[in-house]
Length: 185
Image: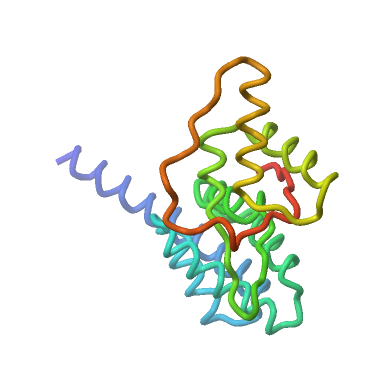
């Protein structure tokens, strides 16, 4: 009986903690988005995101809401990346997907490639230095060019050419990195 009581108490405490966190999250997103329905939608998604499609849906939605309030796209991205109330794991995903690579807007559609392909092969410092080096030559460059540069630099540094990932489902030719920022979590 005592174990049952302890279990119920622990479950209740966990529920209260979740509700408090939810309230903080809801208040924060309501202040950011200015719309309660939008805030509820976003926090219901960000706490359960487990694949890239969900991530894209949430961020395109949030960026649309911010833009409708007169924010520039980059400001919207910064709001996402700097939201201190987001669960830590989701926050890291935000930094991985939006805080590293600036999204390039082609027409009305926001297109971007998941930079985790790069971060699985290279460190953030390697990627950052590669972007800076290529920026000195041209403002826009393809992700393929960046990967080639990083691969050559790696082989020059320690003789170990890192294998570029298997053929990618999305052509990199339509995705350009204009800027790479290293934002701390």
